[in-house]
Length: 111
Image 1: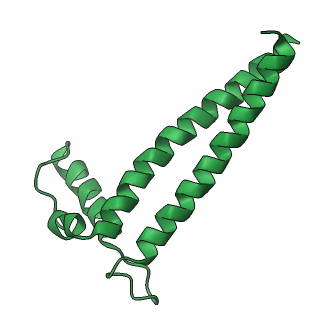
Image 2 (image 1 turned 135 degrees about the vertical axis):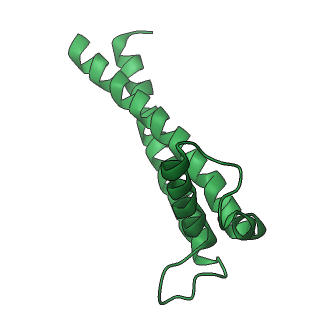
């Protein structure tokens, strides 16, 4: 594979990753909007409360304990559980995007 083909493949991957991230972000937003805790005036979700309490527990205990306040409510809300899964998926997509950016940079420097 020559440099031109490698550059084209890296650009395609870059565009595909950006589209994936945008699609996942929209899905996250839709799930969080549908959370029953969200009343439309103040953006509150079970996921937000769970993340906040989990981070406080980690700061106080020095590790993520097994019992986090709000975990039961979070796990009972299918919208928040799906949003959390999508957030993890978006993290992986962002890592892949970073890899594509590095590949484009390296190809630009080598030419």
